[in-house]
Each structure stands twice: as C-alpha cells, then as structure tokens.
Amino acid sequence: MNKFGICEISLVPVRSYPSDEAEMSSQLLFGDLFQVTRQYKNWVYIRQEFDNYEGWIDDKQYTPLEEKTYRTLIKVPTSVCLDFVNYLSSNKNNFLIPVLIGTSLPGFVKETFYIGDTIYTYEGETLPPDTTPERSAIIENAMVFRNAPYLWGGKSPFGVDCSGFTQIVYKASGFRLLRDASQQVHQGENVHLLSEASPGDLAFFDNEEGHITHTGILITQDRIIHASGLVRIDYIDHQGIYNQEKGRYTHNLRLIKTMF
Image (spheres, rainbow, N blue to C red):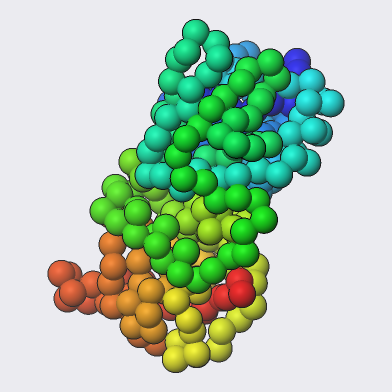
C-alpha cells in the first residue's frame, strides 16, 4: 500500500465507511493531496493535506505518489482555479479533464504544471498563490455558486453543502478553512454584533441542543448567502436567517467570525 496520493480526476466522493452505499461526507477535487493511513479491500482511508479531513475513497480513483513527490507537491506554490468549470489538457493522449472552481494546481507556472511525468496545461482564470485575500473576492466567488443544489458532502457548483460552500469560496479567495461548520467556527476572530460585521464574514447557526449545524457568508449586515436546499440569498438579523418564501426563521444565529 502506497502511503501518499493525489486526486487526478474531477471529483471523488469521500465516504464515511468503505462502501459505495456509505454516506458521502466530503469530496476531493483535482489536485487534492492526501496521506493513506489504511486499506480495506478496494478502499483506502485518507487524511487530506488541505484540511486534515478523513474518510474512505475507492482505490481506483486516486494516483499513488512516492513520499518524495508528495513532500515536493505540498511545498510548491499552488494556484487555484477560479472558473465555474473549465478543462485541463494533458500530454498523455491529449485527453481533457473537466475541473471546477476551487481545484488546486500545484506548481502552476505559465499555464503549465507537472504531476509525476504528466504535464498539464490550464488556460483558465486562476488565483496565484501570493494573492492578498480581499473581501470583494469572497462575495464574487460566492455568487458563482448561486442556485447550486444542496448536496450533503458536496464541494462543487453541481452539489454543495453549507460548509463545503464556505470552504471552497474561501479557498478561491486565498483562505484555508476547515471542512465542517463545527470546525470552521473555531477559526478567525469573533464579531460581537451583526452591526459590526463586514461583507465576507462567516455566520454560524446552532440547533436546539446548541450544536453548530450551519454556516453562510454575509453579503451585507442584513443579507446572507448560504446553502440550504440550494445556494440562496436570505435576510438575516440578530435572531437568525429569515426565509421570505416560508415566512419564518429557518436558522438560529449563534455567532459571527471574521478571517481578516
């Protein structure tokens, strides 16, 4: 069993246990690096380099790496795809790979990067690794996802959950968020009042037991974009998210965090 790997296809489901019938807890995007910690039949248990998230993937859906190659790839400057969807071309049989916003391009220079002996070319819009994060970029990238369907464990415009949405939007804006809302809530600094919040700040919501179960991105002090059924814009106040279509509050506001 090789102990290191990279995703070289568009999107791979990460599952809660080793079966195609298992719940999808997250996804890998092209370029995501990970360590393999154990294997069960045709499944491997991985820990992602980007956020330390763990889960099972099919061993037919990743490329094994030597440790030296893995260590090199996690150190090289990495650009991030900003296009909703675009294509990579490869020197192997000239095939194309569709890639999504938030995809990692390790060692990307002048439209080219290498993974092993494969040369990839990408001509789309990217976020360079030395870019200073801006609030306006967060809002712009969030709007790309508007009307994307909700999908538990999803991290793409074709299906996304609430924390997958915030994580990928922030990644495409130059920030590294953890995977789940219950983890993201421990990052950044508290904003004590909604009236003190700024566009791009994260709002977190809890259930009746006090557990963080939802998150979204503030557009203004009274508007939020979040994944609930689909990625949508709703009103927000000190009580929580108010859904005009339903005529009621749907999420109870717990706190607001800023990463700036």
